[in-house]
Every structure is written in C-alpha cells, then in structure tokens.
Amino acid sequence: MDSFGPAKYKPYNRSSIQRTPHWERMPRDLREAVDVVSHVLPFRTNQYVLDELIDWDHIPDDPIFRLNFPHESMLAPDDYATLRDVLRSGDKKQLAKQIHAVRSSMNPHPAGQLTHNVPELDGEVVPGIQHKYAETVLFFPSAGQTCHAYCTFCFRWPQFVGEEDLHFAARDASGLAAYLKRHPEVTDVLITGGDPMIMRTANLERYLEPLLSPDLAHIQNIRIGTKAVGYWPQRFVSDVDADDLLRLFERVVGAGKHLALMGHYNHPAELRPAIAQEALRRITATGAVVRMQSPVLRHINDDPSAWHELWTQGVKLGAIPYYMFVERDTGARAYFELPLVEAYDIFRTAYGSVSGLSRTVRGPSMSAFPGKVLIDGVPTIRGEKVFALQFLQAREGGLVRRPFYAKFDPQATWFDQLVPAFGEPRFFFEDETATADPSVLSQPLDLVGV
Ligand SMILES: *Cc1c(COP(=O)(O)O)cnc(C)c1O
Ligand code: SF4
Image (cartoon, rainbow, N blue to C red):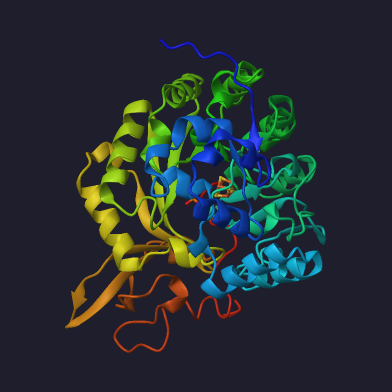
C-alpha cells in the first residue's frame, strides 16, 4: 500500500497563482484571460489540483485545467474586451462598476434562492435550511460555505465572490434539530455548501452530533455533499484530523444512520491518483457510502468514454454512480451548456456501455422549479418527435415518475425552453403548481457539487 505523508494545504487565488511555476507554463493569452475573467467569476485552486490532476502538457484542453482556470470565452466578447481595457486603464472605480454590470448579466440568482424552499418554524425563518422535497432537508452550515477549488461552472459563484448575502447559513444545528423534530416525514438530511468537508472534524462534529439524538430516530440518512474526494482527498487520508474524521463517520454509522458522501466527480482524472483511491478505501471502510454525481459539461465531460471510465472505476473503488445533471442556467452557462438532446445521447451511450452495477445512475436531470426532470428519451409518437420526460423529484410527490412529453427542440438546453408536445396548452403538472411563479422555472439548488 502507498503511504501518504501529511500534505500542506495550499490554496491559490488570482494573485498567488501568478507566483507559481505553473503560471510560467501558461501562454500569455491564457494568463491574461485568467486575470480578466477571475475579476468577475471566482477563482480558487489548490496545490494538489495543480500538481496531480492537471496535465500541463495538454493545456488549455485538459479538462481539469478548464474546470479550474477561467477562460476568455466564459464572458461575452464585448464584456471581455471592455473589462480588459478598464483593467489596463487602472481606473478602480470604473472597474468595480464594470465587474458588477457583467455579474448582473449572468443570472446570479437563479430562481430567488433566498425566497423559495425556505421553511419556517413558529413563524420564524429557520436559518441554514431549505426544504423542497418532502423527505429531504438541506442544511447549510456557515463554516462550510467555501470550497477546495472553485469549479468554473459553479452555480454558487455569487456566494464566492461576495455578491450574495450568506445570512442564510447556520452557525449551529439547533434550528435544524428543532425543525426536524416537528417533521417526522423527513428521512434525509443533506449537509451542503460550498463544501462542508472544508470544515475541521471538530466543527463538523458539532453539526452532526445533534442528528444522532434519539428523538431524531426518523432521520435515517445523512448525506454530505463534497468535492474533497476529487480535489482534496488528503482530507480523508493525511490531514491532521483525517483519522478523527473517519472515527466520526464510524460513530454516525454506529448510531444506525446511513451515511452517504455525495461525491462531486466531474471527470475520471479525479479518480486516478493513488491518494484519491485511498480516500475511497478509507471512507468506505467506515461503513459510509460514496455516491457520485456531476453535471454533463461541454469541454469537460461531453464524451461517453469519460462517463464510462468514471462509473466503472467508481464502482470498482466502491463509489456508486448516482446522478448526471444538466448544467444550470447561470454564470458561464454559454461556455458549458449542451443541447438536451446531446446530453441525452451522451448519457445513453455511456449507460449502454457499462454493467448493471453502474446503472444505478440516473440522468440527465434538470433541477427545475417544479422538480428534478429526467430526459428519458427522444421518441417519435404519432408522427411527432418529442422529449419523453419524468419527474425524479417533485414538490408535489404525486408527480414523480409520471411520463410526460415536450416538443422536440434540437437547440433547447434547459427546461424553461420546452413546450408541451401534441399541441397541448400546458404540461400536466402546471395546474397543480399554479401558485408557482411561472417566470421562475429554475430552482436554486441543483446540488451538483454540494
Ligand atoms: C436533488 C435535491 C434533493 C435530493 O434529491 P434526491 O433525489 O433524494 O437525491 C433534495 N433537495 C433538493 C432541493 C434537491 O435539488
Ligand atoms: S460546483 Fe460544488 S464543489 Fe464546485 S465550487 Fe461549486 S459548490 Fe464547490
């Protein structure tokens, strides 16, 4: 077995990356683009990603490079040119104005994040939780609202650049526990962020411990969304409190809970390093389960062979394929999005190439306002080519898994662009969710990486 000594955790931002040898390896135009774009979209990476995951002989096409480093085409050409010129001019006031203008044009708050799905207890908003689907409550600990590296497609980007008020995050689990006591229908708590695994073990423990209390016996499943399995596996192997973390996982499992790490893996390169495999071995040895999820992204994983490797290697190492998402409608969306029909073809081709043990995965799925919508096929019915759709999750539980159909549209990239098939005036669920604001079809938390 490999042995892994302690590694120093070293993050990089826009300034410090410019003092690394890696920076020197980047052509001038790429460096300029990183500098310009990272004034608008957040940039953060770490030493492990730089040294172990990026293949510097293949930049800029290397998928992990593209996932970590901003690119010129993530901004509209005019916005890029204006921003670059203002930067060169050194006019700080104009720069701040320009940054804000570009951010505002990138749909920073898809679907009113702070207004939907936020539950109340005795007339008071409970901080740090969201409750959309009956059985699962999301929990946002305030200490876990940042990440080990910022994925360039991340829908949480306004939070990382400080444009979003973080007051919704919770400083402790007392509000969560009180809410859960009143909600016996809830079986799952999903701790999310950012990345909760950015927290030290002692901090995480403070949030987890209350969930093990006997009066929360109805909470069967505790999930933790994390990118650390891919971008900082040292968290589970060689960090000073890595062993404490594994003991904590054992305690949660020993208390009779199912503990699932919802691992955000975008590309099989994240599974190749020995330490990433060791992290999986150590996590699964505690009795916790790792599940894998990711959006399908142009330039990154828009190739069935990437998913084939991810799912088959994952299964071999003990991780269970869970969701393939459709890229959300925010941020550098134009750079990453794919027509739904392409996302479906990638899914089907990859799914068809793996054994049943990898076919636990579902997708491609869009987190839209009424629920998670699965693209289930592109059949021709009564002479009309359509998208066959289903809800995998719905605000209204009764909608789940009822097939419905949208007109085929080869260009459509998101649910709000679809219209009902067969000339029908509305989708079957639209009567039932008539109170929802129809202008807000997307739903805030897609949980791709979290
Ligand atoms: C995806 C999601 C969940 C979890 O759904 P599962 O299908 O149980 O994984 C819970 N809440 C929200 C808001 C979600 O988007
Ligand atoms: S996608 Fe997830 S892991 Fe990546 S930066 Fe966003 S919250 Fe963090």
